[in-house]
Image 1: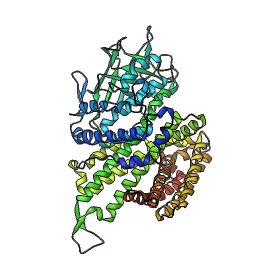
Image 2 (image 1 turned 180 degrees about the horizontal axis):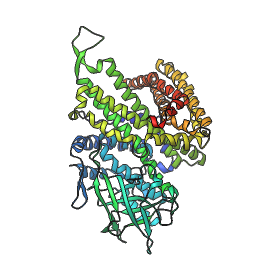
Image 3 (image 1 turned 60 degrees about the vertical axis):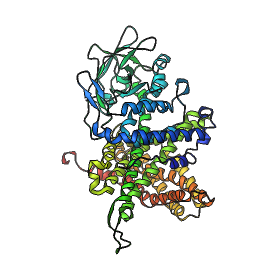
Length: 600
C-alpha cells in the first residue's frame, strides 16, 4: 500500500490565494495565526497523519471496534487509544477552540486543512474529534456559564469527548418523531429516558468521560420539532469540585456492523433504564433543535472535508499503483512492450477526474472556511453578515457535492486498480466502503439539496445566490487578462457555467411557490451545479495565481503548470456536466414525477 503524504504545497497555495492567512492574522481575533505559526501547525499535523494515523487505517478496519456485553464497554482497535493521546499532545482537539478555555483559537481555514489530513489518513479516527468539537460549540453558544465552566475546558483539551444524540429507531431525519423524554426534577436537573441509534463514539476507551448532547421532549412540550429540548447527559456525573462521580444511567447496548468505518464504534445508546439519566438543559426549553443545528453545521462542514480527504487518499493510492502496474502496450507506441498503466489515456482520464474534482472541492471548502472566519471575526458587521450568508448557502453545497464527488473518486480508485481493486488487501476498497456513509449521515444529499433550494434560496428570494453569481462574473473577467491558453478556455467554459447557474436559480425562484415538487425534483442536480461551477470559480482563482507566478519566474514552475493543467481538465470535462445539470433542473421535473406511484 502507498503511504499518505499531506499535500502541504497545495495547502500553502490555498492559504495564499483562496483563504489568505496573512489577512486573517491582521484581525485581533486571529492575531496568533501568523503564516509561520500556521505552517508549523500544518507540518506537525502532516507528520502525525503520516506516521501515526495512516499505519493504523488498514489494521483498524480489519480489527474493528467491539462491544463487550458483560459491562457495555467498547474496545477500539489496537493503537487507537495511544494515537488519540498523541493527538491531544499536539493540541489537535483544541485547534479552533477559544483560548480562554485552553484552545489555540486558530481560524477555521487552518482547522479545515488539519481535519482533512485526519480524514485522509484515518477517517474512523477523525470522527471523534469532529463531533466533540461540534458538541463543544453547542455548549459554548447556547449553554449556561455553569455548563461551560464544568465541561468546556476538558472537552477542548480532549480529556473528555462529546457526542450528538438525535436519531431514534422511529425517527431518522424526521426529528419531529423524537420520543425520548426528559422529566424535570426539584433540584433543577432532568431525568432523561429513551433510545438513540447511530451514535458515533457513543462509548469507547479513549476518554474517561463522554458528554452526550441529547434531544428529548419535556412533559408539556408542544408536538413536532418545536417541542424538542437539548440536554447535556454525561457518561460520568461530575462532582462540585470537578472530579468524576458516579456512573450516569446512560449505556451502550450494542454497536452496529457497518459497511465501512469499522474502527469507529457506531452505538445504540440507552438512557434511563435504571431510573433516569441525569441531564442538564442547554439554553431554553423547546429550542433544542435550533441549538443542535449549531453542532449539525459544524458536522456538515466536517463531513464535506471527509469527502475531500478520502478522495485525496484514494487518488494518491491510485497514482502509486498506476505508476507501478505494468499492463499492455502504450497506444502511442504500438511496437513497444508493456507499459505502466499511468500512460494509458483512460487511466489518465480517471486519475484526472479524481485529482481535479478533489482540488476543486478543496478550494471551495477553503473559500467557505475563510468566510466562516470573516463572519466570526471581522470588525465590520456588514462584512460579517455578507460572509455568513455565503457560508449558509455553501454549507449544503459543500457537504452535498464533496461527498457525492468522493463516491466517484473512490469508485475510480478501485477501477484504476482493476481486479486488484476488488481485493481487500490492496486497500483501495476500504476508501470506497468508508466513503459510502458520507452522503448519508448529518443529512443525506437530498436533505442538503432541499435546504439549498428552499431555506437558502427561495426563502430569501435568491439574494445570496444572485450575489454569488455576480461575484463569479466579476472574477471571470479577470481571466481575460491572461494570455495562457488554458485560462482562455477556462474563461469561456466558466462563463457558460455561470449562465447555467443563473438559469437554474431563476427557474427555482419562479417555480418554488407555484410548483414546489418541481423545484425539489431538481434539488440534487442543483447541488451538483453549484458545486461544480463554484468549485471551478475557486479552482480558477488558484490557476490564475499560478499563471502569474510562472510569468514572474517562480522557481517551482512544474507545480504551477500542474495547477493550470488541472484547471483546464476541469473546465473541459466537468463544467459541461454542470450545464447538463441545469437542463435537468429546468426540464426534468415532469419526467421525474410522471410515473404513477402504483407503477413503481
